Amino acid sequence: MKIFNPATAELITTLEADTAESLSEKIRLLRLGQKEWSATDLAVRITILQRYALLLSKNIEALSAILSSETGKPLQQSVNEIKGACARIDWLTANAEKYLRPEWMVEEGGTKEKIVYEPLGVVANISAWNYPYLVGTNVFIPALLAGNAVLYKPSELASLTGLQIQKYLHEAGVPANVFQAGIGAGDLGEMILEEKLDGYFFTGSYKTGKHIYEKVSKYMVPCGLELGGKDPLYVTDDITDIAAVAAGTADGAFYNNGQSCCSVERIYVHEKVYDAYLDAFLKEVASYQIGLPTEENVYIAALTRKEQVQLLMAQVADAVNKGASVALGGKQLNRAGNYFAPTVLVNVTHDMEVMKEESFGPIIGIMKVSGDEEAVRLMNDTEYGLTASVYSNNQSRAARIEEQLNVGTVYWNCCDRVSAALPWSGRKHSGFGSTLSHAGLRVFTRPKAWHLRG
Image (cartoon, rainbow, N blue to C red):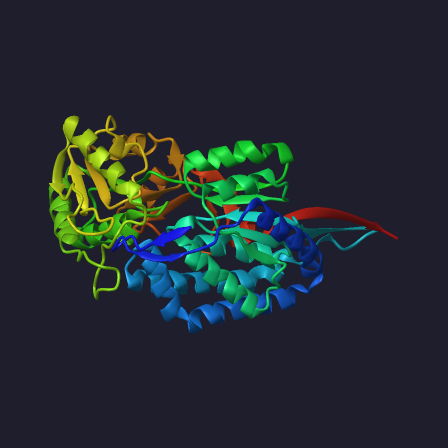
């Protein structure tokens, strides 16, 4: 399997992909190792995974360089991602005792009652390339804390990072027969779905998630899907610091080249502040430095998938053909690698693909609205339901709007963020199930009810 640098189109290395035979052997080892791992005291598992976070921090310079080389993201953003993963591990390990230990519900009287949280067994984590440390941490850390063994398939576009994750988990003390990385492309993913495991957890596109769900439903085991989004943001007319709002919302749309399931993908602006906001937004985006991931102060680097360039060009062409105007960018950059200019489209409508289908790139449509009612209607006009943001000086007003939005996460005066303390979940085509928070720890368990009399 060839690994290319998306910023230069150069070959980095070649990896040996797993076969059906090697995959079966890894699963056999995981089934043997899981029993001993689940019998290991939770405090020991916590200490091991805390050690893993320390190893990531200690080796962050080398790890971020590898991450940037295969995904194309700016080096500082790779550093930020690894630091963010360590922070999530800190929260998950600090709270594992609270949410995974047996829980007494009734301790008085003739019959006592408790809940015991048992591991699922051997689970598959089919992960994503856009934030391999973060989205992986959401799944394999709580799964391991809960006593599961994990078959981890990194995206073929982040395989080198996946191997580093495996290396440092093993070095931290996670046994080799408790965590195994499977290296390969879509054909390996299909082979994993043919294996009857005890749970399947996927991060990626709606199309692939739907396929996985349909394929493994026959096993009657848990399936968690963290899928895409077409995340809306609304700027009300009562904001005062327009420049700050424009800068913050532009970052929400273009950070990591817009390659995030919770990136802002469409913006609605009250007509009273539309012109001022658009002017400030365009100035902010025009200031972004474009270049190689390793260059200093670069904010926009290469897209990870070269196919995404064609998708973005098609969305621009569709929008322009239907009456939109390109206020900024709108084209592929003439340089080696997968580069697309930061793009802002105006005069957009919901007849256009850019306002309906996930873009996953440095492109945004900005639409003028007459007020809150129209904004709510348009924000809900989507098959997705991951996040939504409202910028307003009035918290009560923002809350009234957000109560009407069918999404798993809402933001007031912020966007494009995830907290380990809060559940990360989608609705509709954005998936189902939760990661993070107490819900994301217990999702990797099977609760058993104990009735004790005597």
